[in-house]
Length: 237
Ligand code: 5RP
Image (cartoon, rainbow, N blue to C red; front, side, top):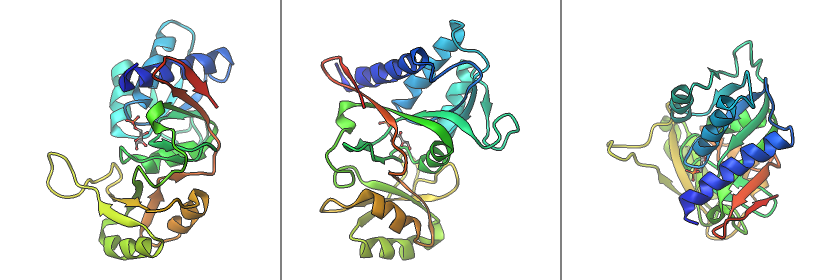
């Protein structure tokens, strides 16, 4: 199976498994992630709404990308602040850039980490869908850790991250001059360490740097992870 086929398989298996285990059911408030694996999950969710399995699903999205897709598919979109949602979600489903053996994650490859973390940390349950390339021994040494920052504090934040051993690169736009500007008006530093770091400890340390808006280590939740493999199997852990 190609990587794209694995993404679709992981996404469909996750939605169908969670429905059959009654962890997704009618009336739920669901957080929807961003990226090329989260979107097939949104698609599968819409198919299960269209076939009548699910009714009255309320979605909270994590990016303009996912908002546009939900609107295209007819899934009703709310914000966490809406009365119907009341700041609490039943489940969030999302992709990831790296997943270690303890289901610690790196997220933010699509620069949507801030809303992705807000929905995840305010959900009763959390599910991650991924192709097998996302599974790693240690997070943070292969895929650069995205850190969302206030643009005017870039140099100060970069110096503080250097002190924590990270080499940082400001994420540049594609077909747009200058840095990527996130959906929240901020910028992204992509950070890499030469040697493995303790992701849990580093999430806390980076969060405390003034000028950091959010960090792409997600270590405080233990999501259920659906990893599709090239042989067509799906590991659930
Ligand atoms: C966006 C994310 C995505 O979930 C992550 O980058 C994985 O994306 P993809 O499924 O396209 O590989 O964190 O901010």
